[in-house]
Length: 130
Image: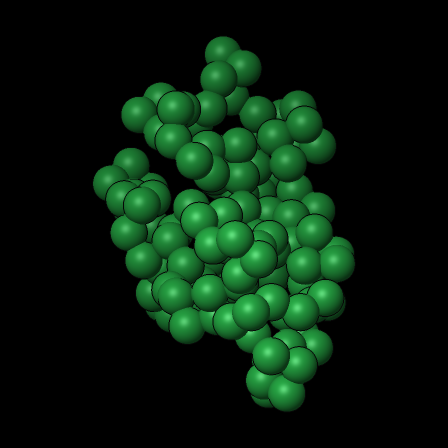
């Protein structure tokens, strides 16, 4: 696939096509036929991509890691984009040592956000173990 804003000779074109083909990332929803390669991602978008990349969804979160109420761990996020991904990542330990209750999902993700979330996932003993 190609997009009007990401030509085939772009250094990331092959990688973008691969993560889109795998369903990890999507075309930028406000750009018709565009990927918006220079646009920052929001924390919600990063959470969704990361959860898809490691195969986490609220549905496959181990029962012992799911909230007892069956609702999202962070009630204030329940109606926000990325809420199911945030719930699954939180249950897997991605947000250990992170002030998730104050997480502005619509703000740009930082490299520190990505590094901490990935590090925590890689170092979790199990998906859901903290």
